[in-house]
Length: 112
Image 1 (spheres, rainbow, N blue to C red):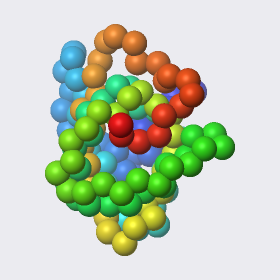
Image 2 (spheres, rainbow, N blue to C red; image 1 turned 90 degrees about the vertical axis):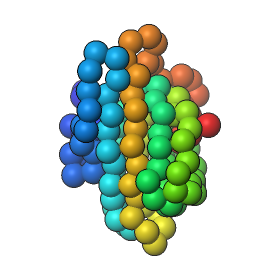
Image 3 (tube, rainbow, N blue to C red; image 1 turned 120 degrees about the vertical axis):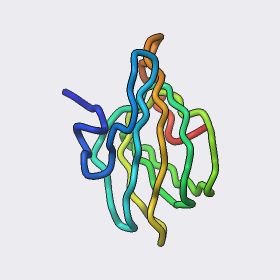
């Protein structure tokens, strides 16, 4: 099953740059939008807006609130999410290629 977010949720994710070392995704949504399950390899997330999201992985859920300009490590993970705030979400994901991109157990949700 292909869990690439560009494939599973093309209305929210788009590739803005890619080479042999990294892939940069842009993510956008509006309040109430949801994503289906997808995977991220080890990545750096940079937020271009402030937002609130609920992330789901199996039976676990985590609410996150992130401010504009946050830059942080996103360990490899599989999740779905929903915009639970009152503002749109706008973020970039700089995905690293190569190395071990497997999702660690137990699954992690959101940035560290």
